[in-house]
Length: 108
Image (tube, rainbow, N blue to C red; front, side, top):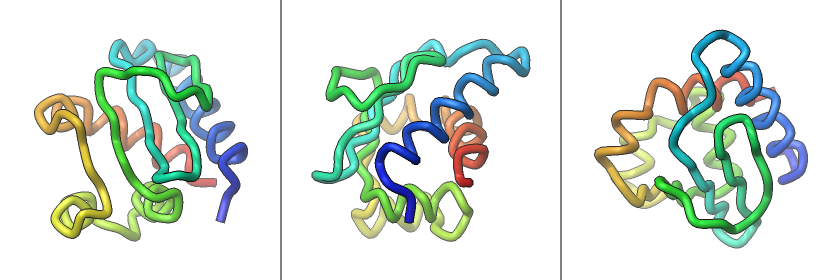
């Protein structure tokens, strides 16, 4: 399992790569609350471990975040079982394709 620093760096590269592919940086801020293991804050291509306010907060264990990125954990099942919580379901649904693309690029 990746450390918080490794995971942050993977997401940083994926967010930069996403912007480089002509999609532009995400215009919405996202905070990953890793349930006591730290935070990953995404603001466009800027990714940090700061616990800052965000438009969307995703609360998920680090292990489950990696499983989601690898496609080993279904997001709907994770929400239904309480393993994944979203601060704004509507915003999350709107951003889902971009978020999934970044997370899938960040898996290794």
